[in-house]
Length: 66
Image (cartoon, rainbow, N blue to C red; front, side):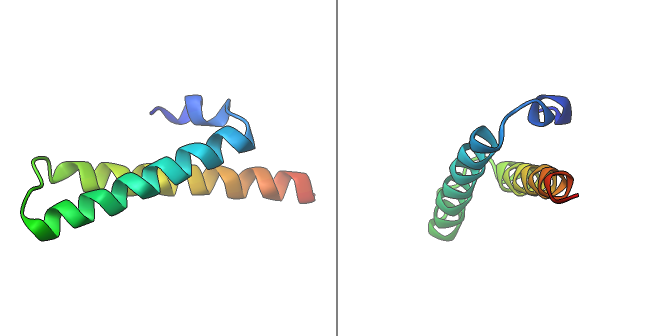
């Protein structure tokens, strides 16, 4: 998801996306350990999306504190 789309979302939407990506990441790790993972590159994508969402949430939190 492009960064501009993430910036336009509300905090609640971002937190929902974050929880979905965390669940997907957990499922991908389980699949990897069982040898059933079809797209190993998806793990990297999910980790980066989680990082992007966390970054935007932190920036919004700092804006509201200032």
